[in-house]
Length: 274
Image 1 (cartoon, rainbow, N blue to C red):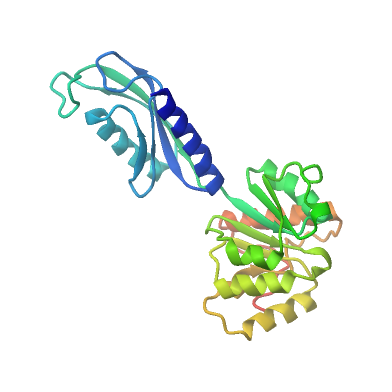
Image 2 (image 1 turned 90 degrees about the horizontal axis):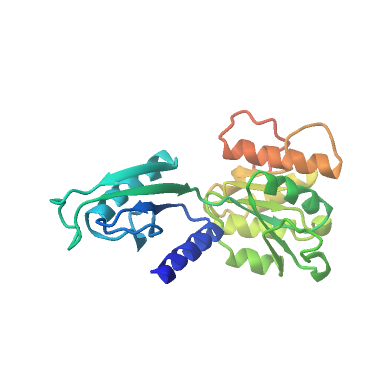
């Protein structure tokens, strides 16, 4: 059973890397007459599928019912289950009490950052400090070392357009674009709109004139969906400052405002090239 427990722990870590929401139920105290022993774990997903076990039978059904509740409340909980000698369906072992801890893991919010320059180096520590999972992509190998951006969770040396064609951001994720010299910014935005990706927040740096020209060019492609109208460009809140660190703060603040559903955001953006 130790191997199975380690497998569940590894699966939980994998889920977090992938941004998957789940509830982990752990038997903290399992008395002799309960099917679940201390340390038994299971993972419950929003679609009611599961992995692992807390011992099966009636206890497991009760635990899974509680997991469904946790998926709704999104709050951790601790609960004691009492199984009587007449409890239905617990197999050959009956009776006793089990104490189970329920831990909710929200979907990981990933931020895909295209461009590993100075602004990226200022932005990643801020995003990391508020629990966001930063993935940095740059096509220059000398810019994608872990030493340059130690707080990035993942760093890739990759052709920008090829990466965009393959990655699949979720509705919990963000995309930030500021490639060196803005050389690849339009190509990335164009491909994102072509795919009509589900990202929660997409931001691109640039002057209002250049941004308007780029977005108008994308609009003329008549791609399906309304992604172009959800792009934040120029990126960041209007805080009246222009140092690299201040711009990074403005970007992080705008991203959080979008995540938190703030209305009337004081943004620098123009809409859809208009």
